[in-house]
Length: 138
Image (tube, rainbow, N blue to C red; front, side, top):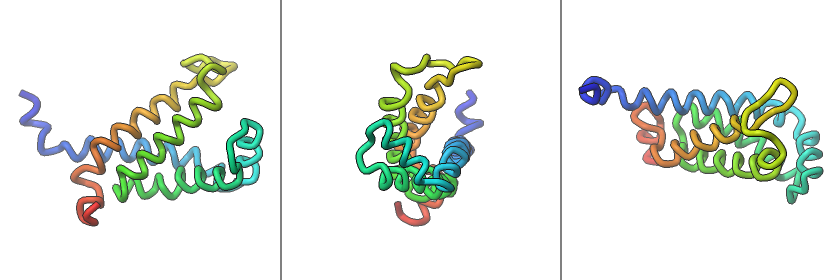
């Protein structure tokens, strides 16, 4: 019954998904882009290979990539990159070192998990009707 009502607006759901994911990643990537050397120092501490290169890659992915994601440009590719970003964050910083949910004194890993899930959803759905991918042939 509701399928008929919402079907013409399917692109709105994908737009909301892109906006939420893009805005969140942009907010988190902005600080990394402002001081990639500090972020590289953190990556060095957790033994990420090529920490300065990785810092720049993540900072650009989470800012420029997030802005492109909001517009729906190269959505599947960027969403895959962001999903990999979250897998690395979960594996190196969160899982086994923190509870799933945040507490007043400690961060959990539910945010990274949710960002991973949303990124994977966009890998499979793409930008949708309201993204630029369809006009760019991507």
